[in-house]
Amino acid sequence: MAEVTVRVDSNGAFVAGDTLQCQLIFSNKDTSPQTIAWVGAQIHCQRLVRESVLKLKASEQLSSPITETAFFPNRGERGSSILSTRSTVLLCNVTINPSETKTVSYTEIIPLGGPPSFHGHIVRYVYKLAVGVQKPNCPAQITRLPIRVIQIPDHLRRPLLASPQISNPFLVSEECESASELGLEAIALESCKRSTASFTLTASGECIGRVVVPRTSYRLGDEVTAIFDCSLSVHPVLQVTASLVYIETINKECVLPSVTLKPVVTQVAQQTKSCTNSLITHYSLPVPPTLAQSFSDSTVKLHWEIQFHLLISRGLWTNTHTVQQSLGPGGGVAELWSGPSSQNVDTIDWCLPVTMLPTLYSEDPMPQQTLQL
Image 1 (cartoon, rainbow, N blue to C red):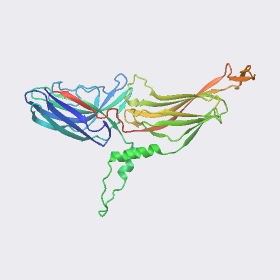
Image 2 (image 1 turned 180 degrees about the vertical axis):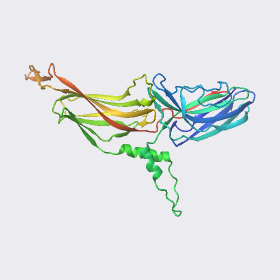
Image 3 (image 1 turned 120 degrees about the vertical axis):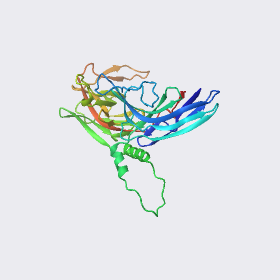
Image 4 (image 1 turned 60 degrees about the vertical axis):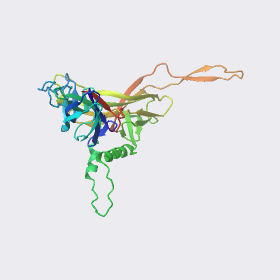
């Protein structure tokens, strides 16, 4: 019995436009020689949608049967392929002797122009490395290795493409950084910019509080921080809840006419703090690095927000005290504060959009899969 192991050289996370390199290791554990008719590889992006909601095709119908000898990377998969590289033939008519091992390298550029990897509630974008292998007189077998792809935002990519190239022949040429490395540096600089922004919250013309954030652009894996200042509030602020969410909005043209689809809100982190006896509260909301960056295409838009939920008192805030007698041999009186038994309260919601930039992160340090032939 022969087997092939597909092993990606990196951690399984790539920038669009970067180069994927992997090794295909063929081994023969049988006592007789094994012949491989052909081996092909391709990278493709599969779009999966909820068929009951969207007009888009949930899957592609192939005219070829499953036992066809041709190489269809997305054969038998749910969804439709929206982006793919050309199929590459790596081997043809190769014989592997018993206990012999052969290694083949596959190199391909992750195509530009597609969406980043995204696992939403209505739409999903999944990138896969598909490797097809066929033995003589046997059906083709396909193994698919999921990979994570991030996109450099256009407003950060354009300056990189427009930057002038040094053409002086007398200068010593240095090794140039790749476009993906420059893009990641641009993302790091963008997310580290300190541009403190202050927003005053009002309701019915009255000041309720002030939100201060150090910046509005973050990377996946960062902590979103904010300060709420209620010292200027006309009414007492009792409690403030800060939530970090991402919102999946589907293009109306893609939704079935009979369906009313609202944006899907997913909460990532939340903190609730009491403001009864404090004027300033701090919030720190961690962002998991495995989530998707802010992006939009013709089907879906993904944006991030910090949502503030305020609980304020509309009536007169009165203090109530209860008195305890002596606490020790020396006597003395202790006063314990307690809030009023009832209070007229109101709620106020306010949202602050933030930009979530990508980060090169993968849960699998070196993804690989083995296919039995």
